[in-house]
Image 1: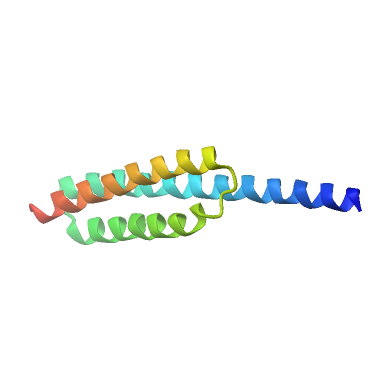
Image 2: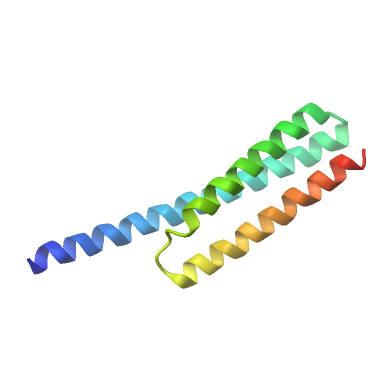
Length: 100
């Protein structure tokens, strides 16, 4: 039975690690969308900007749902901080969109 508990704990840790990697990747991808949106904003391509910001917002919302399932409080806090920076970046681009 101890072997089964150990294997279960190992799988739980591996699953948590994959969840963290997924969240980090999604946040990085969303930030890339916002960088592209910034470039498109400079060129006046508002339709493309709107799509890119929408994609970043979707990534933000998706990662927020997975964040609560991160087991380690320290990892969860680091990810929460990255998520806050993402939200701030989204709002910044949205604000600049509104001023055009």
